[in-house]
Length: 408
Image 1 (tube, one colour):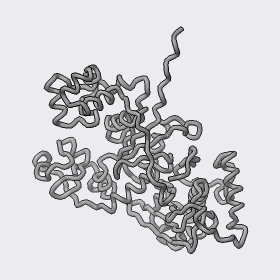
Image 2 (tube, helix red, strand yellow):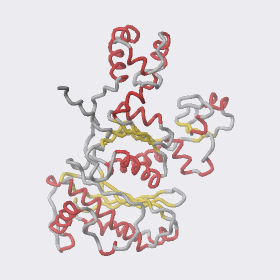
Image 3 (spheres, one colour):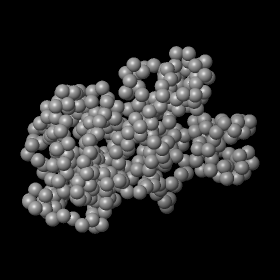
Image 4 (cartoon, one colour):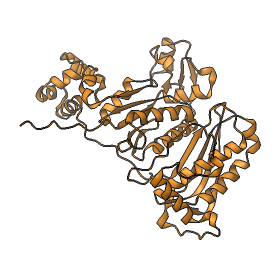
């Protein structure tokens, strides 16, 4: 009697990679650069738009070489603060999607979305929602590859660039991987690819077909073993998270419709509710409250306030957030507000901080805990504030319970 075939793990690892990151931020913030060949950098190009890349311009290229290939290219001075802020906003979306996030660089990360099937949907649905949120809330394009291994997820995100989504199902892994050029394998650069090409090996499938001895004789023992494993999509590494987060936040894209101040207050209530529940779920408390504003011209601003004592009380954070919002009432009503964000920072473990006693029922931790319990049991929409009834609060962001781990 034949044994049943071993079922492969699901494709539930995402590799999310912002497209031409620095250049995309500049094109987002400066409409006159959109659709044009441009690059970020002075003597050396740090990032080139896809319009410039189509002319052969590449990162790390000298600007004089770039102008020879593309005489009309526009060079702009880097704005590191703008890129850092955009990265922070994108990673907040990553962390709001799943607590299992492994940063790779300022513009890319791996996400493990296993366990979200019943809450959100398939990994493809999760990836689609993530891409929509990054576009709506940060204004940037992002490509996402979905696969069973980190290696293949990264390959998939590269194949579907720019601004794409590609899911590689387990049963189709090798059919997708083997026709690709050998440069798709991690560790294969110009020198290694030339060594392999000299032996007539130009595709991943040809690497996979080689015996280890022959491969090692060309590229060495260590590299040969690595390339053989990757060519068969053998990559056991899991998504590894770092230290716990120093802040937890949530934000809402508001679209192009003008919002009244009452609507903005209702949206703020919802954001505060969501963030404070995540604080309590993770046994965290915080002291610093921040509101983030983005306007129709993509200009941004932030306002913060630090409390006298750390807390996880919804009422306390709501009072502080409302004060910050009211202070800017006239400006945000006159200008078109397209995004509102709420963040709690200066986080500490709840059991490491002496909690202040509440002086009224509004700040009662028992009330917060009772509301949290109802939402955990019956869903996030089972109980809410009366002021939110009938409100349309913008782009719908699912509130995802952490799958077995506190927020990071």
